[in-house]
Length: 393
Image (tube, rainbow, N blue to C red):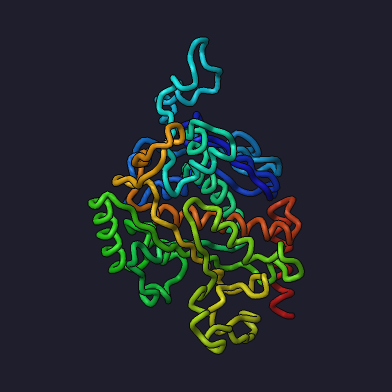
């Protein structure tokens, strides 16, 4: 499976094309729209989420609710485009109109964004040409693609969930949700204002977000993604570029503003002896091989172990501040305070939704590389045969 996304933040639409999905897989717009709505939610979101109501259009690759095996095209229209048609239009400028006459030009790069380096790389004097594509608006399509991937995984009995682990230094207590089944955990998260599974931590996170907004500041946090039901052996140890944990880490780091990844215990492993890091192996007739603990997050030697895959990502505070940082005008070279395009005091809850979907996409891709995937029924048969094999190995 491969995909590509296209579109600008204030352009007419966002587009994704997915190739390689198996035929006969159930897929509807409702499955995707539910996840897009979650990306727009969460306490701390800004005005853009009130302007746009993201709904997908499927324009190829699906007939009567099932995939055809041909490329699937997804589109989300930007409602705000009607206010930007002259600023972001495709047609050449009218005769006599100079580029510098176009409104909303940006010559003051914002610290922490792609503005300055992107302008240097592609030769843009109007930095709007950079920020329109580098915007986190692109994650709309990453979630849409991930919603398709999640539907694929669910067909194979693989379930995903993501939650907020930390915001602004406020951390969850994993003991509060450690024994919950996946669906019960999801119910709590989806009904929480910051997508947190710990009610007490959630209250403190909401307050931390409100405090940051009052100060004109922003805060970041940590999200955790859990994948249950992935069979062992997905990925490989034989080449560096086939290791599943490497692919998952790369997917997490591809999300806007993400600056770190942990698998299982993550950096805590540096402070523990090996006896408190590695997982003892056991076997019984019902489960087959399993680990007594899951400290390595369901990944060993670049492959899934069959235990839940657990991966965290850290999101930095959004760099667009209502108390702007200093910058330099690229035309005059004079110092200025950076412009404010729009800002959320905290987008960590929404980022947890994005993280779930990019990780689901990467797991789905890895599974399609391992098994025959022309039809969903054929893939199910191959997966079931493989599960029986590894159980009896």
